[in-house]
Length: 163
Ligand SMILES: [Mg+2]
Image 1 (cartoon, rainbow, N blue to C red):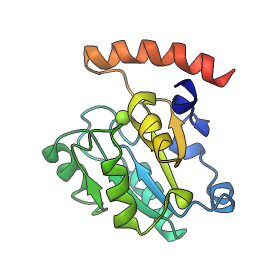
Image 2 (cartoon, helix red, strand yellow):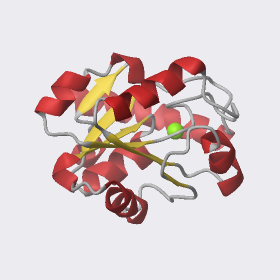
Image 3 (cartoon, protein in one colour):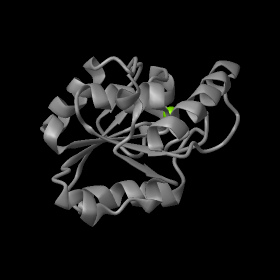
């Protein structure tokens, strides 16, 4: 069980990702979470820095698909300008949205990475399909009480899986 919660890579933020290293690992597409991974909770749109980072992924030849458990409204608004393939109400850690994202990107489990801030949704879901899971430190603190509770458990689990 704990193995399933272990990210393949743990970085401070998306900006710390070494794209060249990921290319060497044969990563060709990224499934990317929105809330607290790309923007703070309920921040409506991406910052210029994030937009540039996402555009650069495509320039570097990677496919990108946004996969969020949040509502259609939230995801459509966030994606308005970005115009990336996107899946809302993904129900991560269920695997169906991850499979659909790979289909949209034309990638396979061997060539797909997942980037997200939550062990129990992003990492667990990605690991179930043997994707290259990347955990980032969550942005912002304005979260639902439930998520705050989950975070506390995540901290304990993370300590155990990383050591
Ligand atoms: Mg998130």
